[in-house]
Image 1 (cartoon, rainbow, N blue to C red):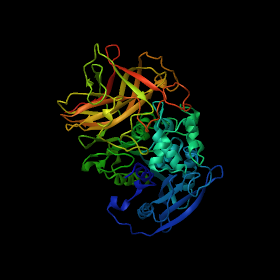
Image 2: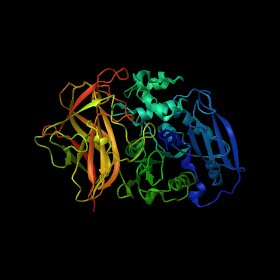
Image 3: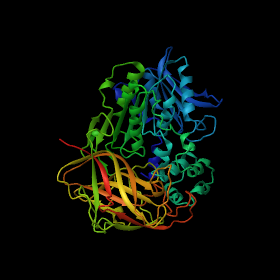
Length: 577
């Protein structure tokens, strides 16, 4: 399956609603009523089209709302019929400017208000009993979170799958670097260009980035706007929930995957509300399920690994129980669910936890070591809990015209996703490789992962990347999580500062999240480089304003790991019995 096919396959409408019959063990039998293209008025007069599935006959029922930019479908969609047989109305709406809805399509911008207005309209309909739940994944997960901080009083619960809430950090820019593959790949697709894989890969290399949209025949203004706003400014605050967790009042079941592009966001949303919501009742009713998946849920095989039968979690059944509890008042033992239901890869088991990060975590520094030749898999780089003393630094050249290729990981477009053997990447001279000795006992790493890196560069601005690897006894090296830090934003996105050429500086690389049991005999490995393309844009190394460069300069990079510059990988180690 091609990267492009995989991506488009995950622009799903509402697979998280289907099939109800399978999850409940009952076959649909009751007749249903279907209404197509019902126009729902927004506060500014714009009318958004929706399809409505409801039980036949007179009565009032709880309603499940799905708001999507990916086409609301038609009467043949079985999910709506299945839920109608269970006593639910389902409303599937095209977002503003999409499908048969009026207005102009502007990603992210109108969803908070349109979501609220739609909730209010639904609650007033004669077939609604005033209780609304929401569903859907990816952008459809965003349409749920968009209105969550100021939702209608009728919204009683949400089930966002692979969601995001703050478009700048969750979707657009990571460590100050643009998530090029996702942002521009998704942007051109929903903008109506729809390039085939080979042309999309060529498009990613287009310079300058501020004119990226100019290479397409169809005008897509927002592609240019995204480049014009590389920091968290008012543009992005208007297109996200602005970290407003305190005002969320809706019980939420988030579902995500360790290899999803929104893996970190899925956990951040749950934890943010659990920590900040004004109501204790709301705080304790935030749950998350995160498995060994990508931009979907419930499969046992992903990337190049098989995570065993437990990975085939019946997420749909849990979602149905969630609706039954919050929308119909049925006792589904929700209070017995763990707030964080995590799949520990390697061990391939589910485990419930009460908080994130886990309280018993031992954040353990694994220090970088070498004799100055950590380049490539055959170099002398090592990783251990022993602090460095006097050691020789490592060096490599970063050439933007020959970047390190994205190989698996947290992707949905532009590159393959999931765990892949990294040994081919590790043969490159611009990749530093640091590995532990074979482990003498199991080591569990569950939580946020960070790389504290001391580095110098010949460039005034550049990037540094980190990747955590599980090396199996057969030598295959499978990626777990990764991250990037743009040098000019090393002190914060609101404090841009170019590097002093050749002077060491401290970088904190957020490598996102994972849960993995490194088994006895395996090795823990870290890769350090300066590119991961096309997941992230290539830093031109010039220090010029973002998006203006037309050429890519080469940077000479130095990674220090001595007593005064103790570069280390900070791992969330969970004590084992």
